[in-house]
Length: 385
Image (cartoon, rainbow, N blue to C red; front, side, top):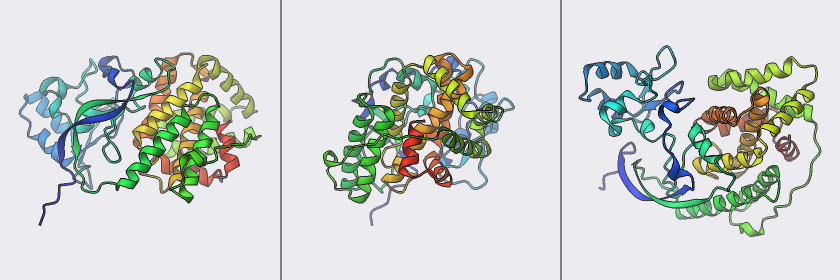
């Protein structure tokens, strides 16, 4: 009988990966990072890595820190065995004052937990060999915003330690993945029409494929109608959704609370929103291009259209709508008292910590459903808010 591969084993894989054009320019900012990934994150590591670290031959002072840094979880699994215990400042105890990691500095990159070694890189080998860097890292957004050129993709030979998994998608699913993602990325990058219209066209594609996955992409009707909408009703929907993030996502509590206070203290929510929108568009005049590039990079990172937390292509579309509406809502309102691209990058990077590294897609679908906002007309209105 053939021996099955250990699902938690990782092997060194050298292969040609598809990467976005800016990937080659990525380097960690280290001590220059305004919002280090070593602060505030509930980072978990695998059992194998936990025991490697606890058996590491190192200086006594580092040994003591390692023993205090990683704590086994109450209900551990081989993949999620231990978590980083933050110090009183909310930082990883291994974070040095110069912004670098003491473990990395003393023992080298090879002993780092996989998440620390590769973040914000996200290598994927399920449907294709792909890797990008996550929008939750400010350096990623700085590279995305360095110019207004559309994102292009190229091939690069890279080496990663990858998890072995015998359960692989079939050839047909891989073919659909590659064709649909390329087709939709092209639609999303078509600047001859507004970004909300492009997203709605993608909705036409995904909803059609849910009916018949074999429909030729070039035969799908991409026509979208114009809409009229009630601003105050839409703001009410988003304020209600903010309440959920205040209660359930601590990393976004301060952002959503600030926005709620902004509107609750106002006698006219629409006036406040229009002021915030006008200011935002003056500070970030090319905002639509920036949202476009963030969306494409995030979709590539999340393996669009096969999101893990969505059940079908229509849900994938709803989650795309929710992502765009949410980051625009957060950006417009929080930039009201800000005036720099650095401020916008900080806001977006923190927001994408939740979007990219949690089950945001399923959460936003549920929240929009609770607000009775899954109707095509309401979706179109939200996109144009």
